[in-house]
Length: 161
Image (cartoon, rainbow, N blue to C red):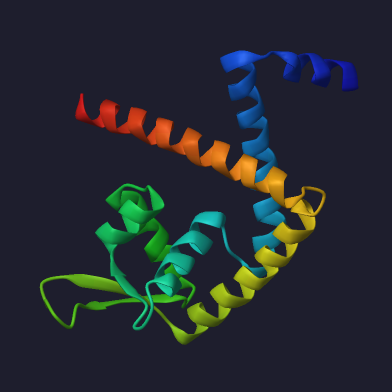
């Protein structure tokens, strides 16, 4: 099995890069499940709650803003918000500034859950990344940030076509 895995990951260049990225994605998803399952959260749920927390008081954003920030369609974000409303973690309410608009806001329970989940996630992330030194982390972070720029540029070209 180990030899097959080595052969699978041995390709260099674009093919190998995408193979390793796909494998890394699966490993990160498994990590996210281990961290967030105890809180009853999917990673996208956590992401939405975290974005609302980062928005600051009153921890509210529109569905469109949430969709844009989490890279989801408005229909997709509606399903996620429905699930979070059902769990008592967020509420929908009229925008106090523009009553034609609806905002999604964290409940007290949602704020508590996202902050506890963030602490657990940060603790586990630090544990997993501990074998990497600061220079390695910086290089990886820079390379991934650059790759995201390239992929987002490509996505924007596809949308515009």
